Amino acid sequence: MKAVIIGAGMGGTSAAIALRQLGHEVEVYEQVTENRPVGAAISVWSNGVKCLNHLGLEAETAALGGIVDSMSYIDAFTGETMCRFSMAPLIDEVGQRPYPIARAELQLMLMNAFGHDEIRFGKKMVAVHDGPDHATVEFADGSTAHGDIVIAADGARSLARDYVLGRAVERRYAGYVNFNGLVPVDEEIGPATEWTTYVGDSRRVSVMPVADNRFYFFFDVTMPEGVPFERGTARDVLADEFAGWAPGVQKLIRTLDPETTNRVEILDTDPFHTWVKGRVALLGDAAHNTTPDIGQGGCSAMEDSIALQFAFRDHADDLHAALAAYEASRTERAADLVLRARKRCDVTHGKDPEATAAWYEELRSEDGTNVIRGIVGNIVGGPLT
Ligand code: FAD
Image 1 (cartoon, rainbow, N blue to C red):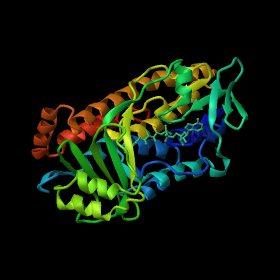
Image 2: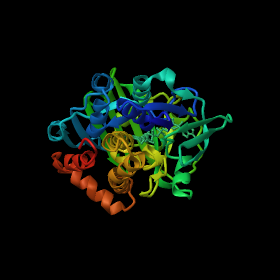
Image 3: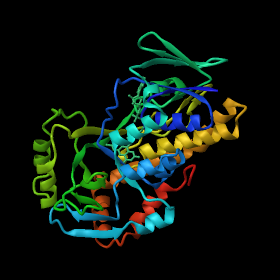
């Protein structure tokens, strides 16, 4: 079988490796001309790490991952620790340590595992069609590619999604903007092996370690959609938005590099359950675009890839049965994660201020049990459980 994969993000590259593990011919097409992902890092939770391990990348993933031994929540204004607890119960329960990883490094690891030179960069899909004998992708340069199947991992603004669903899908603004980047580890901001989150005023500021003594940081700023922003001004904007926050937050604002700080408006899509049309299937954000509030979008994309592999392993002689099995195994799980993230997003960002205030109160008496139960609930349920 020949698979044509559109998009060399986390979804497309992991699917490419997964299908190749079964011995299939795989071609990957990507619109950009070089690996420049938006966003500084992501937390790859235990379910995502298990997917990477399954793809043969256990040692590489561990080498890129930050060590998170504990989590804490800090009062935004007083700097007082609301709770601090070990990650050990989570790791024991799910059997795998999570790893925050710099996004460009994760992306490069996946590209190299498939074969960086084999990825056809600079190929922008402009149309996709199903057909009786093969599916066809048309590119902006006038060329085409044919495959027995097309896996469209073309991200949150997917073109293939409109084709598969037969309608355009509206993305929903989640009410906040995320600023993110990397800084050297600094104990004045947070302990070196802790995921530290400052909360207050329906906002949060977080740091967590990635490899090479760096913190991945992000600021969630509730604001209307479409507020203008000039790249390079992040420090001024954040100093203004977070005036009066604790000294650790002020140190982070002074430390970050405004030129490399990213600003992303956060959107998601309502879940839908049709992911396949004939020989064309959606995967990753194209199929389930979530807010990052539980850190599961990329993990879910990698779960899709493993589920796709299992479906083609179990239905080796019938690609339509395989794609149907893939869809059946994933839509409910992925929808659950989107809705869990949306719920978390609303509490974190003050959709109902009373619920947010109640959460802050809960954090003051938290011993880790409830937070870890919630995270385990997100992690379990995928193809590798
Ligand atoms: P993408 O990574 O978007 O890749 C799609 C690829 O397709 C791109 O390379 C794009 O250039 C290409 N493409 C698009 N259209 C075309 C076309 N027409 N032709 C050819 N190529 C095309 N997830 C986590 O698991 N943990 C986290 O902590 C986390 N944090 C996040 C923080 C933020 C601020 C955001 C915004 C997201 C976060 N996510 C996180 C989600 C994660 O980034 C996505 O779920 C993940 O990148 C999805 O991978 P993908 O391959 O489906 O899509």
